[in-house]
Length: 87
Image 1 (cartoon, one colour):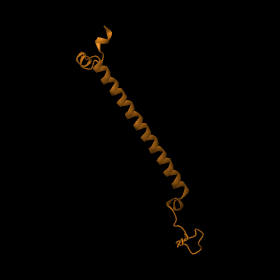
Image 2 (cartoon, rainbow, N blue to C red):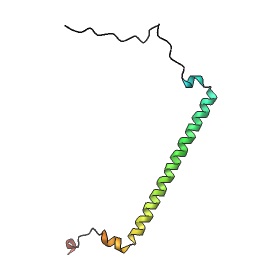
Image 3 (tube, rainbow, N blue to C red):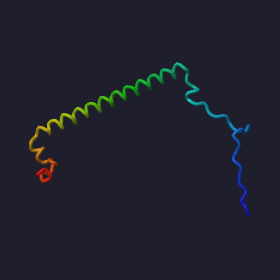
């Protein structure tokens, strides 16, 4: 015997309560524009900070690599060439 499926409640139910007002609906347009501009400024500042931080890390990595390339002990320890291949 097959089960009867229950029907989902209709979206256009006239007895349903209207949706509550959102914060966007309650705030005035000038306050919304101020908040949006402030959010955009914060996003741009965060992107700029990340770019600066990335640039500093890259410069530090290059400086460390250059320092290690001038260190003879490091070069000998990390020599990857197999001299038997070049005989």
